[in-house]
Structure formats: C-alpha cells, structure tokens
Image (tube, rainbow, N blue to C red; front, side, top):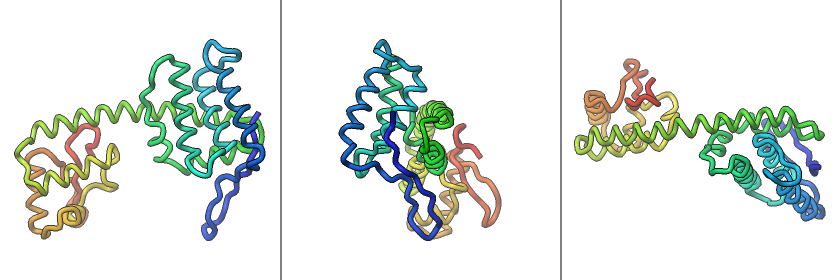
Amino acid sequence: MMSRGKLFLADWINPTIHFKAPPSSVIKQEMNTFMTWFADTAPRCKSPLPALTRTGIAHYYFVCIHPFEDGNGRIGRALAEKSLSGCLGKPTLIALSQTIERNRKAYYKALERNNRDNEITAWLIYFAKTILEAQDYSLAMIDFLIEKAKLYDRVRGQLNERQEKVIDRIFREGLDGFKGGLSAENYISITGISRATAIRDLHTLVEKGVLIKSGELKGTRYYLNIDKLKC
C-alpha cells in the first residue's frame, strides 16, 4: 500500500537523516493511490476504518510518500486532524502539532521503527496515544487560558510596566512555563533593570499573589500562581 523510503540513524557528528524520500518519478502515482485510499476509508464510504486507525495510517502513509521538499510533517498532521474530524462528524480541538513537537525524538523513533514493512501496529498504538495526549493537552490549555484571564482580572491596574511584561512573557511559554522556573536573572534579562529593582518587583508579585516563590538564594525560582502551573 505504501511507498517505502529508508530511515537512517546517524551519529552526533553527521546530520541525522530521518527519512529518504522515494524517487520523484513515482510521487504522482503514489499520491493518486493515497487520495483514493483516503476517500474510500472515510465513514459511509467503500472501506470505512475506525477513527484512530484511519487517522494514524493517513499521517503515516502521507509522510512515507513525502511529496514535498518541506512541510510534509505539518501537512501530515493536518491530514490526521481532517481524518479524525471526518470520522467523528465534527471539528476536533486537539493540539496534535504541539504534542508531537514536545517529544520529537519519540515521533521520529516511531517512524523509524515502523518504516520497514507494512506491519505498523506499533505505529498505530503510538499515534493513538499521541492523539489522546493531544486532547488532554488541549483541555489543559483551555483551563490555562481561563486561569490567565482570571489572574489578569484580579491584578488589573496593580502591576507596573516591567511586571506586566514579565508576566506576559511567562504566559507565552504556555503550560510548561520557564524551564526550571523564573529566576531573578530571567527577570533582569527581560526587563533590563538592576538586580535590586528586579528583586523588589518579584517580591511585590509574590505579595500580590501573582507568583509563588520556591527555593532560597541562588536556587530561588518563581512560578505563576495558577492551578495549571503551580510548582
């Protein structure tokens, strides 16, 4: 069913080649076959497949063909989301791209392990778990954004420009926040102010309940005081 490329593992010195595409001469034929398969396996069509099975195969099938020089992964994820939406009969709200990006190594390892023959059960299990993780991530992100709105409403007009800039910067990190927490050095780097002013700002943010302080001295770190990011 699928065109076979070859995946390679490389050492740390040479660039890693995750996938070698099939010859360009067969791409058009392979894409025509893929589009026929995609149409036939949709709900209420010739050979319908279960939602997660069709979604996993659609992504894997497309990236195996690898019709473009760049962007195949992104298009493959879009196809996966389209497939899932079609099978469920409604739009889906899943952070598939973000979930894969959070653990790219696992994604490439799963592709490499299964790119040898048509036995792709392990890939389908991996991808189904990834979709469920993406759904959980999306739900957590919705809660996170609600908590963000609540926090801003609670301290509206109480923060100086520097503090607002730093809080906004932390929120842009999403659910994971700053790796290891916000430090005074992070605050200084973002605002360009002195250490003494940074410490005063941070203490004020803790007093106002915007941040939670953890650790002491050089190990002091700060975290947003919302349920989804509490340390």
